[in-house]
Image (cartoon, helix red, strand yellow):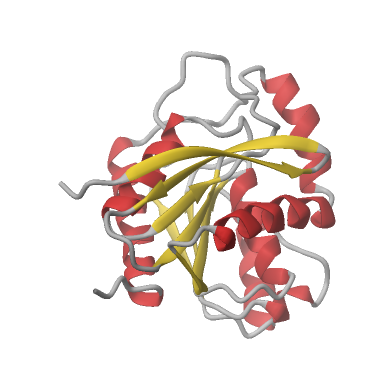
Length: 241
């Protein structure tokens, strides 16, 4: 297995001190890089492990923070923090840009070859970076078929891939339709994969605390969604020796 290195990085965003997880591939040369955004509960070992898996594939990867180093296991705390955030594109963009600045400042990062992948709230942040016109090579989201302010999707400059469970009550068919209509009207190169029988956050292993209704792990589709994300990166942001 490829030897990777990891470290935590502290940086300011949203009037908080964020604590991200940076994973670096072996070697010293510059590599393409990926931002990874977490679910609404916040950065956990799930996203840290995904950053490390991408580093093993040759990417510089930063799993970014949403809540100033906190993991919001209580659904009421999570919703109190995330609902206002999801309603404020400028705040989401601020969180995304702060993480992007950290990733770009890493000497191993090729600053012209960056993608953004996110889950839930972290996926919404990734989409807002695209709507803000950031030069990304790809955007991938799971559980985050969020729509933006009118017309701003036209600023997205890269392919967008989105995965969602067919039984997700938080991202129901009407929301999927609104998202795809926005992407199509903006001329975006978009794809949506609907995973049959899956609930919200189907990619995330079962947690030992209360969650919002409609959440459930689907191991088979979780693996498929990860493979789809890796394939998106291989297509749009290939690692070359």
